[in-house]
Amino acid sequence: MNNSAEGNAHKTLSRLATITSISGSLTAVLAFAFSVYTGYVTWYHDYLSVKPVLQIISQTDSKGESVNGLILSNEGVGTALVKSVKIKFNKKLMGEFKAGWDNVRKQLGSPYWIGASDRLAIRAGVILPIFYVTQTNWKHLPEPDRQKFYNALEQIEVDIDYESIYGDGDQCRFAPWPQAGDN
Image (cartoon, rainbow, N blue to C red; front, side, top):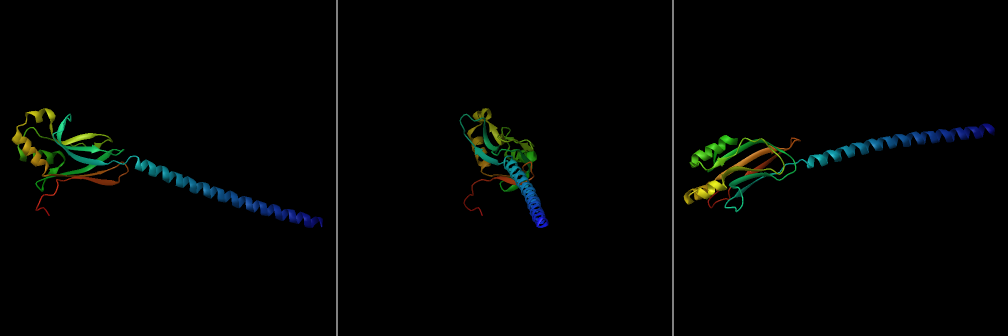
């Protein structure tokens, strides 16, 4: 009987050891899974917290603004890395980056109008005039040239391809409102 009690105690201890080792292994696996999940959630939060959002707006006759024309702004929270900028004028490709703006300016024939630089990184919150007349020059611009500038803004199309620091791409597009007869 003594041997039987020892045998039962040994079986109970053996079962407890097995249960303990299984629960310890299960705890380790669950902790590892939770760590991987936490790492993913942290990465995703960081990914979203550096997403740039570029917008182009047309700004004309603005009181108190420093320029009239097309303004590029980064409304997101991360830096936009610009990959390409294509400029069309009157539906014709004028070129990329600064060369495209220079070609538009030459076609329009006015020394007052300034095109953008070849800036390739646009930080969050930056507002960058990309085709504009300074307010000082605007005051001295004759009315026919002002009208020519307004008409030019209705014919300019801008396509910007950019990406975040994570490499995910996006596009920003500015195009005039469709005119009657446009397809």
